[in-house]
Amino acid sequence: MINVTKTFLPNQEEYINYLNRAWEKVWLTNRGELTIELENKLKHHLGVNNIIITNNGTIPLQIALKILGNNSEIITTPFSYVATTSSIIWENCTPVFVDIHPEYLTIDESKIENAITPKTTAILATHVFGNPCEVKKIDEITKKHDLHVIYDAAHAFGVQYENQSIFNFGDVSTCSFHATKIFHTGEGGAMFCNNHELNHKLFYSHNFGHNGSMDFHGLGINAKISELQSAMGLAVFDHIDEIFEERKKIVEYYDINLNLNKLQRLKIRKNTIWNYSYYPIIFDTENTLLKVQKELNKKNIIPRRYFYPSLNKINYINGIEMPISESIASRILCLPLYVGLKENELKLIISIINSLC
Image (cartoon, rainbow, N blue to C red; front, side, top):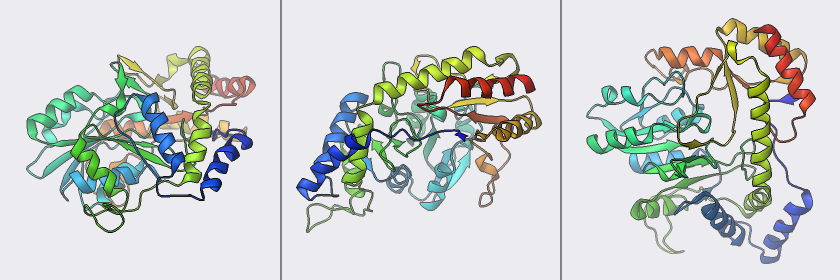
């Protein structure tokens, strides 16, 4: 079986060596030394001022929306994983969709202002497949209209835009450390914030609101990561350069050998150092996609229709039409991309696609 992705696992001994430290301390949660070490390593590697590691990648969105959303309207993208929209609704806010750019696949910044109403409190935009949004224009809009901006950067670990981490943009940026991601802690995530006061709110919010053991800053929830997860993160982090290098080789192999005259590729925004997080291709029609998918499945190759459907079409949303997002969602397919994918497997994938396109 060649799946769309495969979890990178370090050698078991490497993981156990980190676990042994937790055993020696008899400290498995509540920000033990492994969690602190991982945060410090990631902060230095990514070039960020603050990082709060969490137990999954969705709860940072929920915490940011709880603090900044004010139970009101949130302008967002219809082309993202469902957690982007479901988090808005879960926090008693209302998603207001804005269609996407047909090449970058991120929210179309030129359409945002038309969606702003007196009830709008924030923009929640996704760096789709690690491709940055037009962050400067969005920043101008938020300042003009006194709004907040939250970036769902679930796919954007290691991405740099204009010589700095993509996590440095927005009021809050969030990331996923799920097992399928480039960097992972098995299950986990993180939130990033440059504003000291807001970062303080994020921090206590992820730990029940605690101010010491007997007092509280305010409302909070349990978003803490365990030492078991942090041990996995440390073991994976030791291989991070290797992971990026192998993924880059696979992306370049696809680029060279796929017949891209018949396919649309994701256009990476200028001044971006990308992270090779996914390899999406966009077909001319949904029928062509389905035909290719069927033939790949016959060979036990399992790509993914990611993202599908367009989020304005899910059953608990009464979304208006989003023509570009709906069109892209019906025609996009993410191909297998992971460390350990063999050249003969790549050749088989490519030959099937090229023969049918």
